[in-house]
Length: 139
Image (tube, rainbow, N blue to C red; front, side, top):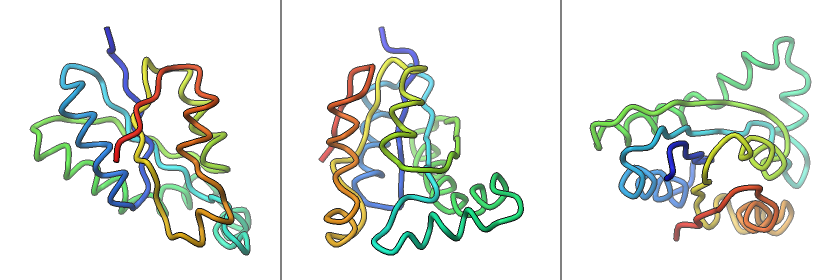
């Protein structure tokens, strides 16, 4: 039985679809939405700007606030409360590390722009290949 679900979420439509799927398919489970801040970019802009902050945790929370509020709004449409979490670093590595504390991961098939996917790589594919728990990729 699946009792704890991790849903990594960025600001993409695919991430929203993944959350909606998790809310429908695992309605009795505890769902945690994780947002990873400071992901690599072609020029390392977000990762560097986060590293230069005085309080990295507060800066990460501020960067994640819109995405996590959207996640709460979606959960509200299902009359469900979710847990939210923020971390920083490389998305695939951070998600895989957190996944060991969950029964499954539900992730969108892709996010970001085509250019970002080409430079950064496909996070969903890396998670699918390396996750210690089952992964559902939502399209």
